Amino acid sequence: MGEAIQTVGPLAGISGHDGTDWEKDLIDASKRLVVAVASAIASDVQMHGYYDGSWQKNPPAWGFSSGWMERQSNLACAAGFNALNSDTVGSGYVYRLHATRAVNTVSAITKISLQVTDGTTYVPITFVNTPALGEWLLWQGDIVVPPGGYVRAEFVGCKAGDDIYLDLWGYKMSLDL
Image 1 (cartoon, rainbow, N blue to C red):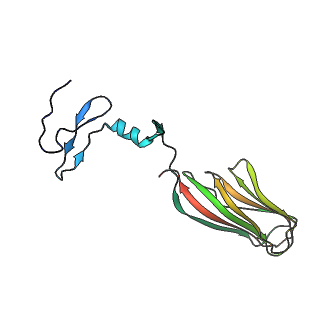
Image 2: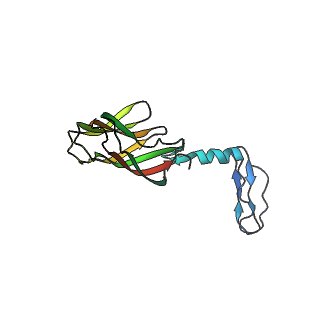
Image 3: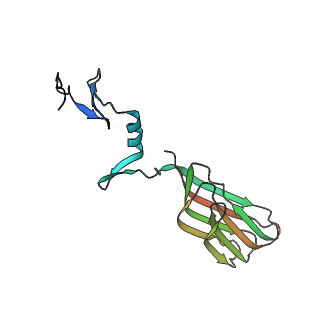
């Protein structure tokens, strides 16, 4: 079936298939096995994993990169409608929002609402009609904010000079791990 392999030592003669040919593996100076794998196969192995009986493309790696705590405020609102936006999620990241709150600390207003957006579509998270003076609108859960997206708080019925706040907690996840 092929040429005979000469064995010298316990690991000598071990071979591995690189997808096309059988290649003899080597032992380095520290007596560690060095496997010869073609670079195209090595990169393919990094992008694929063996799952449920077959090789499949691995999903993007998600992991904790850093915490996300942010406060936005406007300490001199205009009368009527005002909005506060979180920082925009940068390229190569998603943010996991776990809690947020918003408040007007000076006046009772008509409405506070929280939304998440990808920059185009605004999806409501929660709202409160006629919150009392200093009443926080609170939300807890788990929402992924995509690259280019942000969280928005809208305040309706403010008086000129009101103070409004938006606080956010969660974590940042790199998509390029």
